[in-house]
Length: 317
Image (cartoon, rainbow, N blue to C red):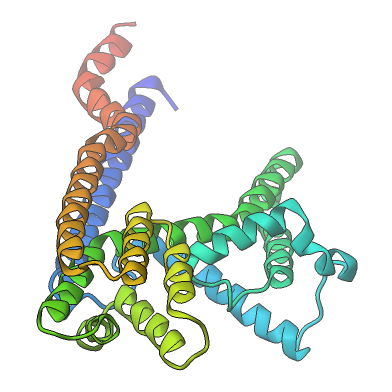
């Protein structure tokens, strides 16, 4: 193929790739924007996942939950050695899993043995898929892709837990102020703290409200004390603001000090903290967009501009 034909084909291919990348980025940004708009309002704030980026993580966690039940009932046999599965909770990865599973809200649904078993199975699947893709080109590429697939699949369960913990932390930061305002309003209306706390879970439909309802039922049914339930509730979220609020509530209930004013002040502070964090995330968005823009769109635009000049130079030589 001559240079006069090869250069225009290369320019057209790169340009099409840049346009496709730009369209993909624009479509993804529009999907996230629509999800955030649907997430506004009390009635639409259900406990689902509003951002499409978390869908794969939810599937991984659901797979580990199903694997936990299957291992418990004996429907499947583990490929991980049984000794390793029994001692999984004593290893470093087992300790990391327990820490992340607590703040991810799935510590009671996924066991350490199932987590290790899922990681082993995903590693084998990732290596097999990488090898099958690479074997079509060369043996060296198959080995590299098998290694990359194994490493990526092995890190997938822990990454899913971390993203689930981040999502729950954002959910707590988002709804903490309204929960405090509802409780403060109930206290000013003459209700007790227990009844005021139960009102939020009764009239709001989101993941944070359902967690509050679960915590209220724990101490109302006598399964644990109120102080222990509130501390466990704060520990299940990776949110420093929630921990401070729970400490203030426990201190006020223990010593009998006025609680409504403290909750209103904490609600205002929590709302300002969430607004600041949201503005910070929005400010970081253009910086994150520089990588796909610089690597995909900018080269295509440069080739479109410099394409005629390159063609003239090629024809001249």
